[in-house]
Amino acid sequence: MSKGSQEEDLVFVALAQNQAERTVTTGESSGHVLRHVNGVRDFKVQENSSEKVPLQVPSDFEISGYHVIAFAQNAKSGAIYSANRSEIDPS
Image 1: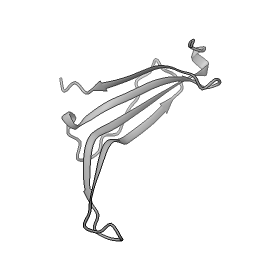
Image 2: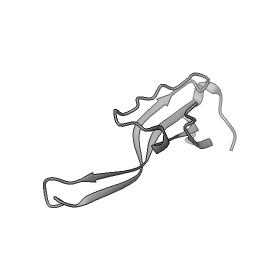
Image 3: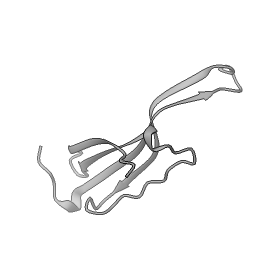
Image 4: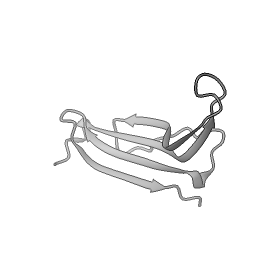
């Protein structure tokens, strides 16, 4: 798969929480605990891959509990030609 021209490229970036739990307080699942893995807390799509992508961090953000996922895609063909998952460096 080959990379398209920069004008055709999109970069997708997600801030993902490693794991989370929520206790359901109403409805038919009331009292149950829902466990989530790799929950996306912010997601951005950017046309120019050479710029920084600002992500919103949630109010309960703890750096050790999150990671970033990014991939580049050709907007015309839909081909994904690069993807990466990275822990967040606290320094």
